[in-house]
Image (cartoon, rainbow, N blue to C red):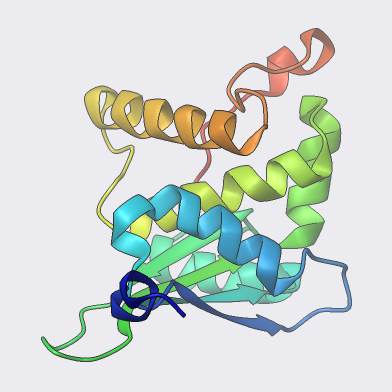
Amino acid sequence: MSASRSAAAPALRVDVARRTTQPAPGARLLTAWASAALGARASGAEIAVQVVTPAASRRLNHRYRGKDTPTNVLSFPAAAPPGVRPRPLGDIVICPVVLKREAREQGKAERAHWAHLVVHGTLHLVGYDHENDADASRMERREIAVLRRLGYPNPYRTAPAAASTRRRSPA
């Protein structure tokens, strides 16, 4: 092992909990997508990804956002004390049933939508949001750039038949 390699900070750690029988990408792919979203901030950090049922998504969305419906992705940033390693960034909760439905309605490849929601959720963990137009534009530009580097199309360009169903991600 080279000296520069041994001196490098550890890569992003992603803990995955599957709480549904629905298929989901593996931990390596989820980690690659989240790492791409974080860039240099991935080093020495940790996130948790939970893959949940619509009922669990609905409960969390109702409790934390006041919306009584399942959603595609939720993000819960962590506030860790200084010096904790790996540095916890928070949790991302994804509902594959909602994700699949949206991909179908929006004319997107399911894998591309998975990548988008992981990138989207990860960006929320580090302070991006879409509460106003300026913040939404900033976040969307970052998502588009990250997804392009990963080889995925712009998630905000929908297929013509699906254009009428385009909505901002709720997370």
